[in-house]
Length: 188
Length: 196
Image (cartoon, rainbow over all chains, first blue to last red):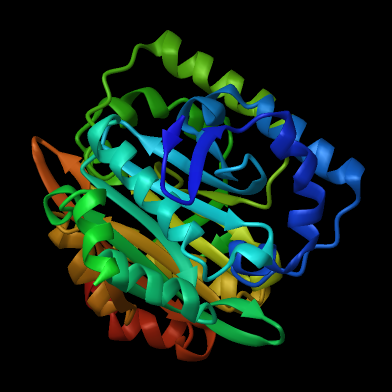
């Protein structure tokens, strides 16, 4: 378990799988997928889970954490989607599925835990992620935490009928002062 | 077949699979893979091809892959539209000229603009993009010639011969594409053709 202040990161097990149908059909998945409007049956969510499990190459590169509140309530999934051990990169993917836990610091607590884990335990040199320009909350979060906006992919996706840019953010190890320092800075 | 003036694009079939052993072990693959040095046996190449075919049969994807051949039919490389995202009409371009002696002659650029033309004019894609490592001066020049926009760079994303290089991202939108004929002239391929 990776212990935070507001949340803990735990193995992504059955308790979290049970939440997926709700999360994927809810408002969180709109941001998580860069603008898709998923309408998925429980059977489709199960199929997708099996499909992920039976790709061993993909599973080997993927490290999924469940995010839970300090009293153990599952609220999201934070994942290293693709651990590239040749180039020593970690590609992050994150969803707080329950909108009640947006903007309360839960996501930033989880994100900084995951970054510490990637640099200090997996020994990667770079963590990065993609979000869409229609997601100002994540853009603010990236700046706060110290990521650099590296690429603006023009008109990458269609979001609610209009084209949206996608933004690639990257963070290098030498730019990361550690979670404790970053959290201290955010308090002030 | 997509007919160009320096090359044609054809289905990526057995004639190409037979070349993979040499191509993957050759210098060209360093550029095609952004910095890998593959050292693979014939058995390993064959096994990988079989596993890949079996996996694809069960997990179909909308990838479009072409073999690149010279006008007299010699296979020299491949080009593909990968990571296809149909609902966003988006794809990533990937390419490699595996055959030594066919870089710098305009073959790769002719293949590229044929493939872009096909993606925009036939498949009605909205955007095509690619990434290349900042060490790859030849591709950086090529991107400038064919009018792709540099959208940024993922810093230090590729390890090649012990050094980390940026992944430079280039893209072109459908409405920016002037068409194969115009681009053939603009990219200087008419002169390359005359020289042959």
